[in-house]
Image (tube, rainbow, N blue to C red; front, side):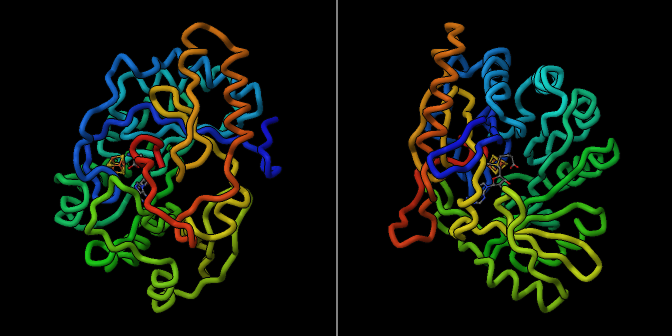
Amino acid sequence: MLIDSYDRVVDYLRVSVTERCNFRCQYCMPEKPFSWVPKENLLSFEELFEFMKIAIDEGVRKIRITGGEPLLREDLDKFIKMIYDYEPSIDLAMTTNAFLLKGTAQRLKDAGLKRINVSIDTLKPEVAKAIAGKDVLKNVLEGVEEALKVGLKVKANMVPMKGMNADEITDVLEYCKNRNISIRFIEYMENSYASKDISGMKSTELLEILRKNYEFKDDGFDGTSPSHYFTMTDGYRFGVIEPYADDFCKKCNRIRLTAEGQLIPCLYFDEAMSIAEAIKRGDIKGAALVLKEVVRTKPEKNRWGGEDSEVSKRAFYETGG
Ligand code: SAM
Ligand code: SF4
């Protein structure tokens, strides 16, 4: 079992299989990065899988594939199947912008994928275009419908931004509620790659809007999820992600692996250690030592919204959020 210096059990690994993306979301990657990681520096699926096996053997029980946009990487279903075949009980999920889901959802499900989280920031085509930098909404919504049809469990993420999509909070929630998709509203997390024009919405403001339309009770935090949950009178449950809230870090159970093999203990900080060399020379013990060291050095708390807060230099498209 992997336990950090604050007695938190780390059993969740998020794997970014590529930093590349077909969207240019204002809050994540409004401009194409100055340079992409050269393809030859990326770990192959076989190499990533070697590390997955170590992590699973050390106690990881939940794996989320993310990016950049994970569906841009060829043969993703084969990678999913490798993990599934090694340990079918792993909670195997993916976060995607859904643009390429139509036509791939069934293959991913057949390979062993259980759940997906999809970014649904708006239901207006022109707003989707303003957020993502291209006309994406039709494909995104068709992708969501297909995922539901093939039986993948679907959750949605929305980042509410003032003057952009904040007026659609109830519309997006209704869209999700009607399809039994649980939605999580993610507070915009400032980072040095995002557009400088974003005005994020605080959870208090968001909840005030929702209270005008719905009755719901506060369920607090649940297990190791970073979500603050609320349940409506009809039983529908939604979440709010508040990165500065104490409980966001208190039960944090996750570490992140980038496509080039950087193992990252916290979404906010720059610190990371590479497993690439150990994996490439087949040094299982060496890679396991790096894993344990990263878990040991996991910081107690991020610095979003704190007194010592500064803009995070970690790119979301690199860590996968
Ligand atoms: N491309 C996929 C997608 O968009 O779902 C997966 C990667 S994306 C980095 C993962 C999640 O991070 C998305 O739900 C996105 O909304 C969220 N995200 C990106 N930048 C963010 C920011 N600055 N603040 C809050 N959430 C952010
Ligand atoms: Fe791409 Fe996801 Fe970042 Fe948007 S949030 S630019 S879809 S990685």
